[in-house]
Amino acid sequence: LFDGRDLRSLSPQELRNLRGKDIAMTMQDALTALNPALTVGEQIAEVLEIHDASLPASRRERRRAIRERSVEILNLVGIPAAETRLGQYPHEFSGGMRQRIMIAIALSCSPKLLIADEPTTALDVTTQKEILKLISQLQKEQGSAVLFITHDMGVIAETADRVAVMYAGRIVESADTRTLFHSPRHPYTRALQRSIPSLQPKGTELYTISGMPPDLSKPLPGCGFSARCEHATDLCRATTPALATISPTHAQSCVRVQAGDIL
Image (tube, rainbow, N blue to C red):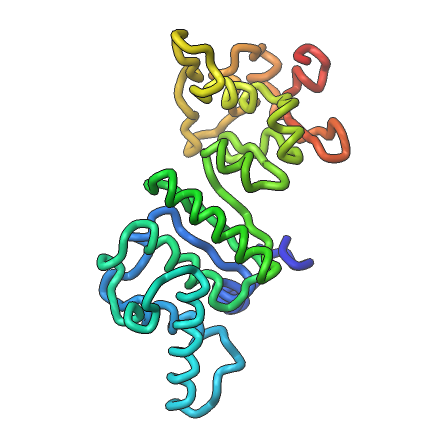
């Protein structure tokens, strides 16, 4: 559901009108997500041309307005010499700059929702912090909601208001960030936290979750995490658990937790 509408019921044209305008996305790898054959300016202009209804009707005035808006957007995300760099190609930018360009394209039409898929992957720690700060700043200025998709627990703790932990395509636990990190209930969430090296005693063997993720192309009976869970029983392997509410802000899907066997 988005803005009161079931996205599954929309036609292809309705979805095209929604994507890039009301819902925008930054991809995991900016180098492969950006078109190497088009300049940065052309890629920003494409989004504005399709979705910005405020552009002038005159072709000449339209091109001028798009260029001015593109320069404004690049300045907004901290790209220096924005007017000159509009004519450059993605490979002429650093990894952090490419990620900023992806954010610029995504935010060019002030979307209501920004989906950020691993926005800090393959970036050094300093650049990661800059990108997270930029997204947070722009989110506040534009009033957009941000949905982070990430495996980085540090990013989650620093940026998220609420967290949904997924395993095998299902949400296994959902809570506000403080509750999730201080009182995790699902065995998978607990195992993820145990896997963080900085939280483990120095000199001890690092904890790892045994086994491998399941093959989702085949039917998956019972709990998807049961094959790797140290608490799993025959009930876990036979029952597909529902997400049960623990408190107004906390829900999880482990049947043994729900039965009070694991506290």
